[in-house]
Image (cartoon, rainbow over the protein chains, first blue to last red):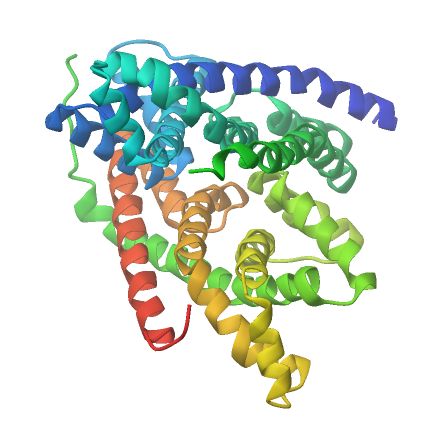
Length: 219
Length: 223
């Protein structure tokens, strides 16, 4: 058995961290785009679409991410597609992220006072104009802190994708443990790497909330 | 798509599924009761406690809230035995969930405590209550009532997150599902069915917590 220095462990874990970062960003961006589309359906005028998004959110918030990953992994396979782990991981995380972001952003839009809609409507603005010029600019300020905060949840969510075989930080942790037999050190370092990514985002979310809250008080 | 769905295995493997559901429920009940108790203690420290206790509690809360549950679980199950703390799968799963929920509920409960009007503390003191009595009778109960919906959501999130304890071979619902799919090769059906079960569990848990909230906090308590 060869000896492993701490640096060997850290280097291998950091190399795998790239994939945690890539997957997090892909899910966050993809989920953000899908979430924005779903948001418009959720607060739109068509009742059928509103309910569809409502149940979509309910479904993804009410079931474990692990099960969603397995369903993506084996479900896509039913169509005869050979699914690599990263496709299943990306697809499931994107859908999961979209559900949560839609719900977060819906809360932000609904926090805008009713009078803002009425005032803009009395100025003969259409739905898109109201959204573009009145509602979204205000909702965006409210939405930034919880959205940044949710990015932390996405990064932590990527850890679960190791279970379907996507090699990112957590999976690398397991592999390095199997080679070095030092679970305490390895998982400790893995936890610290996650912490180093998530903690600044959590702090940023908190300070953004304090700073942007000032604008929100005058409603 | 030329795939024939087959749920016939349900007739054979329902005991495993029921056992898995029982374990998942056991895990979340223990985690909720002990985790919220831990959360109350930590919230007291962070909101009102002595200064020297604050840094370690803050470190605990921040560390847990900014690392994945899966890693916390692996650290407890694989990382602690070399230090002499050997836990069974279920004990490790329970401990990880308690530690996790403790940190999250600490932040939620702290928000509830800090929203208490200053006059409540003064009113308690003017009735010759000790600081502990004031906290216990005047501050804590309305604080918990205030944040009960957020706390309920967090308990549900932890229950759903508990699906990963199958990775250390704790025999919960997702473990039963893995077992069934490895025996029957009906992976999609097995995971689909247990996803539905988790959804039902989440809806039931939300209902139970809402009822519990109404029982623990009768309407007369001032907001």
